[in-house]
Length: 467
Image 1 (cartoon, rainbow, N blue to C red):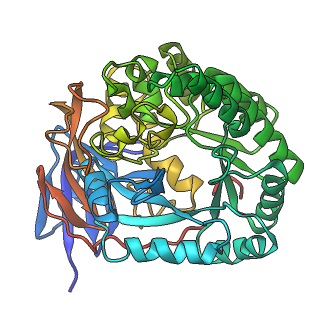
Image 2 (image 1 turned 180 degrees about the vertical axis):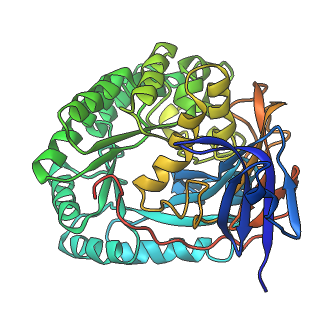
Image 3 (image 1 turned 45 degrees about the horizontal axis):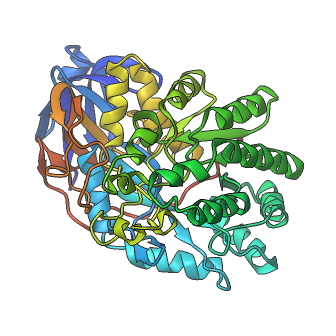
């Protein structure tokens, strides 16, 4: 039984085009587009018609960096795959790529199987996985080849968190060499964790325990140093590199230099670095703990370099690094010792709206909004053109977006399973109205009509910027 939907009268915005067009959806995919009012568009017939007049019709967002149910610092990220993907859908994101974790002493396969078990049957939207590699050895390296073959084509390593996820330069080089052979993409958390641990110890010994010191010890120069080192190790290995959650002017400069040299190096930033700052970390009465994440928030003056990097394509992607911990009972674990505050912030529901606000504010164009939030992450992680665009043959992951609606971001109204909003009280222009995932309505005129288990696991091809 074929199902058909027509979205009429909207401005279809993709990374490459803007056109007033009607969109015909058949059996979960985009079947055709035709300019609104033309005979071709008038010929589209369907039992379901969505009126998008005065609205944008955009691809569903692709969030390439989330941590649902992630264990960290003696607790777990507050969003499950069920609550987190529902919140993502409310915010206009229709695909996430989450991080499965290899524990030290265990295989990649065990970690991946554990994450499949958490996600399967629980997601409102489609999902894929990256693999965190915490224990590089001969077996791990062989497993990387197998994972690439089955659609887990990116591997994250950490230069931070000694004793937890940390890899030394030799382990990083070995994994990069393997990725150079098997087509995988190494994603790097670039901070000098060994040096940072010294600064943490010294700060605590001085009695500097408040959340703001989290930002002061994780210095921008140590992010830049690690970014530089990761780039050069990747160059030695002949491997591509994707640096996650870039937050500092100096780190952007390292990426810019590498890209000017023609190296296959890519950078991601996140809304928290574009819209928040160390002013938030310094909020009194331990409120600053809400903003503890790594890399940390930086002084406001770093924001200009991040926006410029997004405009010049020295940064290509905005993901959320969504890793929420409730203020009450979770962030509070670090009262009296900032190093015990679980690192992570909620944001999967806010990304598309905040980036639309960036369009309103003149930081980026409409097409660049779709490029950094939908199309480029889909290409980077081997999902394009199935995801990330509105074009014949693509999955009908589509958002009808009202660019004129105003809203106030608040924990009172968000759908993430966390007791605060990092953007509490912020007024923004633009709001998701209707969301389709593979043609199925997940949000219908601001009502949730989705269900857990609709979202399916999506294997990925290799990075499409390297072919």
